[in-house]
Length: 427
Image (cartoon, rainbow, N blue to C red; front, side, top):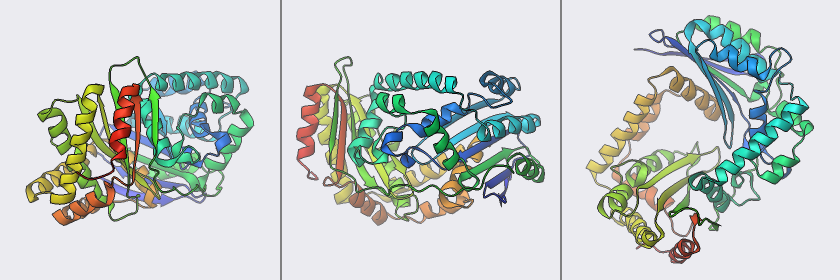
């Protein structure tokens, strides 16, 4: 089944992707603002996420409740998220209701009232969200590992949700200024995928968004070199230690990212990976261990995560070191490489079967690369890799001299991690 894709640039700078999937019953729509937590100043920590919340709180013509009812009452869904480099609002609806959905989302994206009462109400909601994250070690560890890798003086090293102190200090004027600067035509990407008439979608989006000011692209502070630092948060309320090891990886435009992605699959992305097989299946030291990658415009991280009892931590860390050392010294076999390639390409293809996933691919592709990227273009890059490329990727990324660490757990577990990390040597 085909999916015709068209990309348009509207007069005010908005980039619009339309993906025709006539065999589908739904339409998924996404609006991206090219601003996130890395565009914040220290005094505005958490403001991008705050703005995301407040856009749902009403416009001059719709209350917060009406926004929800007008979407959900059509059998549709709506959600949003804020990450380091962008904010996204996305919906999925029966195809016949696309125009109504567009009316609602175009209204709240362009015309939030930022009512002072709603600002105060939502401030309390976000402070509760921050507390909830602190109560969940695996989520809180993400904030600690970012801080350890980038340093809390850099936006990438600060939490996306903000802190209790920073959220308390944000006012309506600051929120409005951040919104006006970031939510502009040049910073906006819209993608629509599903059972659509592409010309009709272009006409509707052009009409609904013609008043959005063009603005300018928002700058960000370049990412620093990864720090070899450590963060620890004591937690005696859980039996497990939650541990993260972070390494500097390729940025979004680095050709080395393809070999690193395949290397990450072999290392720890799935159940057949080396870390999972050795540390969980063969040694029985943990329930969960995995590695994943995140990439930004100018930097990236590969992170190994595990949760386990402190008495197993030392042995598990030594097994991690040995696994990395084997990748360094012996590389990978052709069979292992072929399995990893098939997994990566297969997962990519399967993930693009729905209107929502196609919409997400288009939006993030245009936001990061300013163009539509055919999935097969990236799949071909993966197919071209050889075993030497994967071994080189391991040696470039998994360097013990450029590693940051973070842990939520007991003092005993922290001491084990600190001692192990101090012996920065491939075994």
